[in-house]
Length: 269
Image 1 (tube, rainbow, N blue to C red):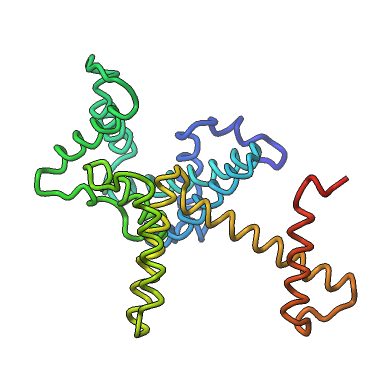
Image 2 (image 1 turned 45 degrees about the horizontal axis):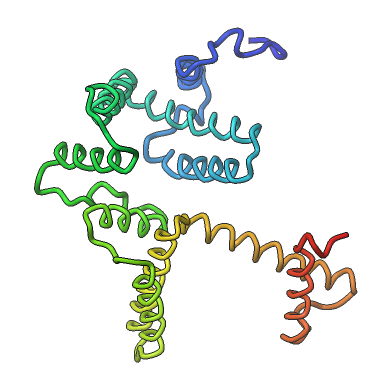
């Protein structure tokens, strides 16, 4: 392929086109790095690309979403290609399994079942999923324990709540948060403190769930705010020829409030 020639004129702009490119990359005259990759070696890359896609979605950057979706699809294609090479399974099996599952779990669309709304759709989905797994399986089974802890907590809380194991109202949720704070104060050992802090985090995640807030996203946004404000404090110090590390805590707090105040659009004119 000559430089300057659009790759889409040689490879179709489809998932099959991506697979064809990968077959070339992993072929006899392909790329040494691509040929070395395995399911195991690509795990972290897939996770990283998923996070980059989430970031692009949160930023609302369409061009970036296009790019990051492509990177995620590349990883999916990579695993499919490796599996075919090793005779584990085929791409067709992946798509067939997905299509069968979607049709099976949407009887209100494909089998004429009548539903009252999305809540009943979710309940039916859970019931069908439970039948597929068997009566002895927990509703919590299948949630990857390698998920980020906040996401994992919120996911298993949602699943438990759909069985009816939940607080009656939001007051009970907030009371539980306060109870966990008190238990941290009462803890007498490092082990107890770690346990009670974990319980507090779990309870705060539950409050997020009740308020319709994604705990992982809320903490990511808080991290970004802290990063922006802290680096803003450092920048102000440099502009004023101050050594940030040598400032007193009160002086640093003053810079923090100054940066925080500047974020308010009403103060910008």
